[in-house]
Image (cartoon, rainbow, N blue to C red):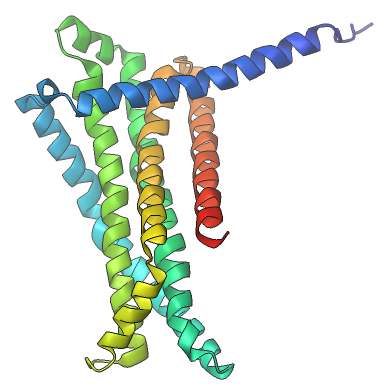
Length: 267
């Protein structure tokens, strides 16, 4: 006979799973605190670390900036045209620009930039750090008297956060320009009314929430994949599972940040 699973072991297994869940999040928060201290410490910016950070920022951001801007501009132009034409057909043209700014600039562009950077930089950097950990390269740096966090982890985290902020800023500005050109054309006659409409959307409270949301998205994208690579099981057979856990954690945090932003903006 096949032995039945013991019911008495189920609560213990659930408890261990909950403990592992909290432990994983605590390690992410702890790593974030360590990287923040390193980022604010002048001794971390040795010539070698500065060169590594500059290399990761340029290599990570430059190839994506043009393509992301073109893709987001094309999608934004289509959405802007749909919103403007639909609003005009219902006699609500005065609300079209506000809707475009709120939907695209405030909500979609920062979230899309974070997802794009997570797939192109965050997760690949986490996989690279996991491989370095498996090969013992991080321990080799410690034996040479170098701090792996300052030499390998901090440059990748800073590059990921910088990429999110840069893509969101550039795409947001381009979208605002495209919205003006779609509504008013190549004239300056509607500039005063347009800036007044945008100013009505970007109130001090909304601007603060937008800045905090973008910063938190950049922090999540740059930190969670790296922390998962450093602290999850180093066994090569479980590396795919570790990447999946990092992806789940990342999208859960991004969902919570977006939900909190919506609550702050509209309630």
